[in-house]
Length: 257
Ligand code: 13P
Image 1 (cartoon, rainbow, N blue to C red):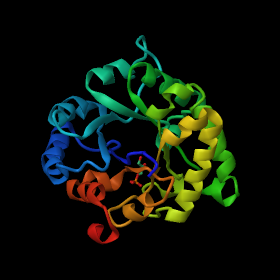
Image 2 (cartoon, helix red, strand yellow):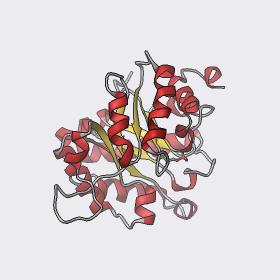
Image 3 (cartoon, rainbow, N blue to C red):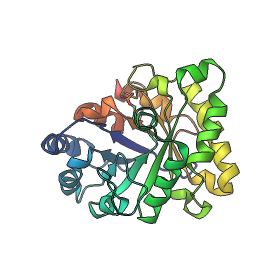
Image 4 (tube, protein in one colour):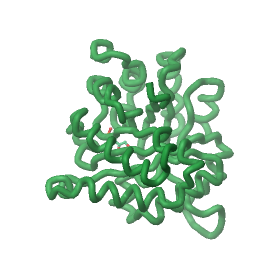
């Protein structure tokens, strides 16, 4: 036992209105009642955070945001500050997702500022890293991951490291149905753990490392069985209450089938 409680997070991306989010939770929460071995969080769009948070009150499922500003407040049209998310009850916020890096030009320096701003507001950052297919095929996976970890976590002090979640999401596995094999994922996670040890020392052992990329009820168990995989960040399969509940409840390969 490594003492790290697995964490499963639903990243809904730009899906579901507030009403649809509540409808999902009405069906999802009874299906995961009593599950204590894993931590679960739902990251709906900003517009659904308030109502989803009210529906989650009193449950063991946490609320998460998909992004946050690095600023506290000010003239930043369209941005949402960490303290606004904290007020709605967000326990986690995803930063540095590959879609934000690729489509919205976010780089490691900004991700690092966002992670620091979240910690300052009492929200735990889920920092995403991952290589593209081109980078993997060029043999650059570990070089890319090393640079992303060093840059994106530059402002996290070792005494706050235990609050951090680091998500390894190979870009080639996101939304493609092409899940990394447990061996490939574990190899990357072990590398990331080593880099965390370089940054944080012994506290690296407390950081939870999530795998993300085409996680489904059928493959989550084998991934979570790996020694350095402490959870999953789930996109498409988390939009369906039954499928995400099966992922949360998966304790053995046969149960998820
Ligand atoms: P999919 O599970 O749809 O591949 O998405 C993964 C992801 O990007 C989660 O953040």
